[in-house]
Picture 1: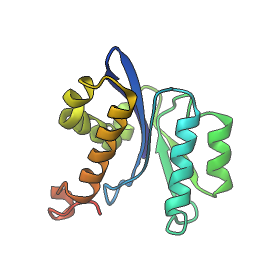
Picture 2: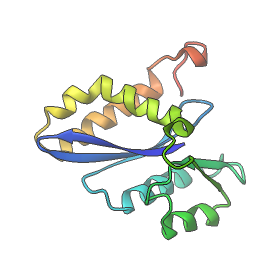
Picture 3: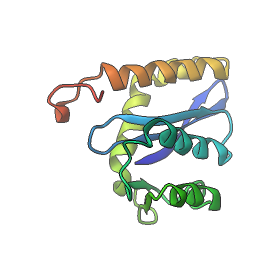
Amino acid sequence: MTDITYLPYNGEFAYLSSILDAFTKQILSYVVSDSLEVDFVLDTVTKLINNHGSTLQAKAILHSDQGFHYTSYRFIEIIQDKKLRQSMSRRGNCWDNAPQESFHGHMKDHIGDNIKGCKEFAEVKEIVDNYMGYYNNSRYQWELAKLSPN
């Protein structure tokens, strides 16, 4: 599952694109950007393929909402080239991507105040990087028998 979330800081926004494994709850790939241009979403998918390509099953499903990043020709081309299947939520229905939305919400609950206090983009990126390491390696989850995603 993939989505984008906005991270407000110092009167500006940083943007996080992440890909969550629906079964293991692991964040498989993410990119923090200071721009909402489509490239950072393409980078997120490329990182997924580069880091997990050997374990991705042919016809694995990558689910997103219907945002312009996910309907772009370049995004669709990357997905098709790697023989992944694309799935999209129904228009205006956040429930179809609920686990990804929930991850972003819990992450903001955990680090949102720290991000709001940042003055520079690099600080935001560092906080998100640290959280992703914590989440994948140390954040225990009930659905995973009280284990972390990794």
